[in-house]
Image (cartoon, rainbow, N blue to C red; front, top):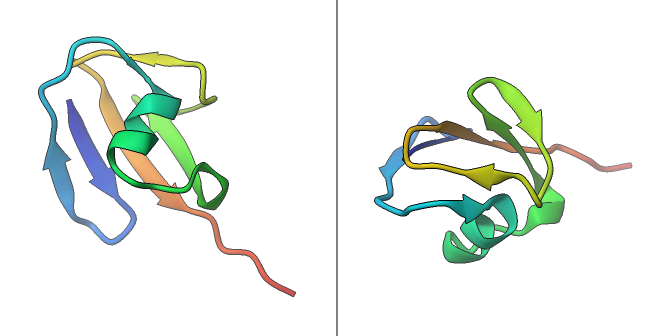
Length: 64
């Protein structure tokens, strides 16, 4: 599974099927601070990812 982060860094993970929630836990990423795209479509935490998917972790900017 190829994972691309907002800063342009790329990580390859060899995992079978994994949920977005568990992937974020494995990467130590706070799910409140990011949006996940699977093959260019936004997905929710319960979505199952496979080793063939291209994943993008996009930081959400918020403030007041």
